[in-house]
Amino acid sequence: MSLIDPTNIDNWTCLEKIVDSGHAGQRLDNYLGNAVTVDGERCSRAMFQQLIRDHHVLVCGQPRKNNYRLRINDLVEIFIPPPEPLELIPEQVFFEIVYEDSDLIVISKPPGLVVHPAAGNMTGTLVHGLLYHCHDLSGINGSLRPGIVHRLDKDTSGLMVIAKSNAAQLSLVKQFKDKRVTKVYQAVVDGVPPRKSGTISTLIGRHRVDRKKMSVLTSGGKEAVTHWEIIESFEKFTLLKITLETGRTHQIRVHLADLGLPIVGDSVYGARKQLPLYEKLGIKRQFLHAYKLKFQHPISGEMMRFVDPIYDDMNSFIERLRQESSVDQA
Picture (cartoon, rainbow, N blue to C red):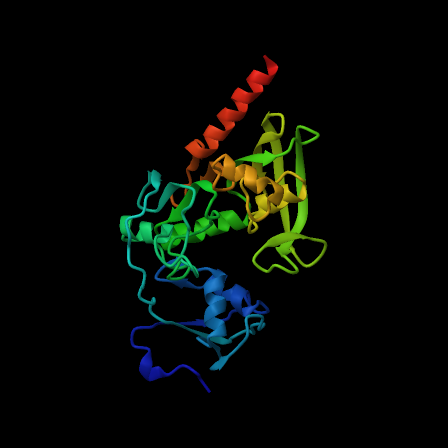
């Protein structure tokens, strides 16, 4: 018995597919992600998985699970509700636009700006600012995160790319998933590494006790790989170049802290004994900056490369270290 009310789907998109021999045996969610288009555009498997969980996908008239294995001649019906109205109110929020076209926008996110609304930050976010600036952002990733394909922590500054169309969003999400996006950061860390470069490869997951934090785990986490290289070293601090292979939550901050080189100003993963010094020096955030970004344009196929100079607060601290170092060597 169908759980879809046929009298209440006037504004829905309704699709039907008959499974052929080439798709028999596939998981239902994989089949939908690979074989079904909506208004001529491919949609993410995550979207179809949610439709399946909501019983908006029927196989031979019955709801099935994501891992249901399809059979030849199965009738698959997909009922897609209209997009939920965006409830966010656009706000004028400062951020620098580095590049923009009809499909995407690249911005430099200033430190202190939250990317998307969440508890405690329901206004004044990057998403609010994007809605103010753009009137055609992709909403395929959910109404609270239109166009967002990756994120930076509140106090991390630097380059971000945002999709302005569903096609661009799907392509960029896939590029991130396939590790075809190059993301390079600069970080000032507390301490001096014993060698010039290295790679950190661990599992990262939620902290066993403090669920708001991430940590390095011996089992149960997700693979995380971070490459680091010294750009400039000082007596007690080091400027590092960081290149990510994966993009786990707080990955750079967790990995460097685990290496014994916490990022200067990091109040969550940094050395607590240093917090009074940071406060004295006027350091109000972790000195981590996304300064290089490279990806393939989702529509034209052109390789896009961007570089963003570090922000004044971080640059001033580095200049201070340089001056102190030159005095010591004099």
